[in-house]
Image (tube, rainbow, N blue to C red):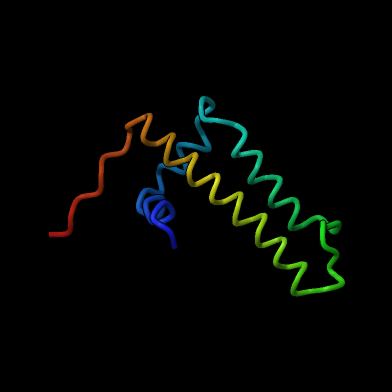
Length: 90
């Protein structure tokens, strides 16, 4: 798990605020929706006749969409400054 994903898992409220805020960028939200549709849709860039290879293109699309969404959520969260940093363990 990369550093951005770890930050996002420590701030689950940031993802919720991002999706519920109308001022948050719409394009990454739509990108995640298209990635989910690409995985579910029966037509792929690489047909499912070759199972392993066709699953890799689905995995690549989902990975790119989640990475883009994570970066967008963290940028949004930093710009709104609504989250306090996590407290260090005591």
